[in-house]
Length: 79
Image (cartoon, rainbow, N blue to C red; front, side, top):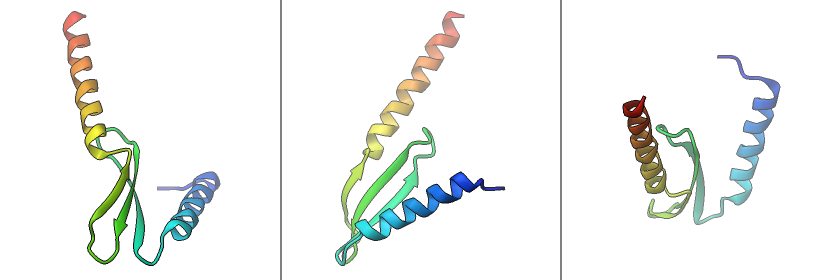
């Protein structure tokens, strides 16, 4: 897979932001929600591994996906 220069710069900027936002007690994780493709940022306690904060909450994205799925099913039935 080829990465464009713009994508490479974006990845570097995100990595730099993660390093700057991470502290001695906390870490920042960035991942992609598989079903929706949305970016999820998680603040983790480095010592315990506990989740401190998640934006947007993965649970919310799961609900959004289900709603999109239901809307798609309703749309298919009407056609």
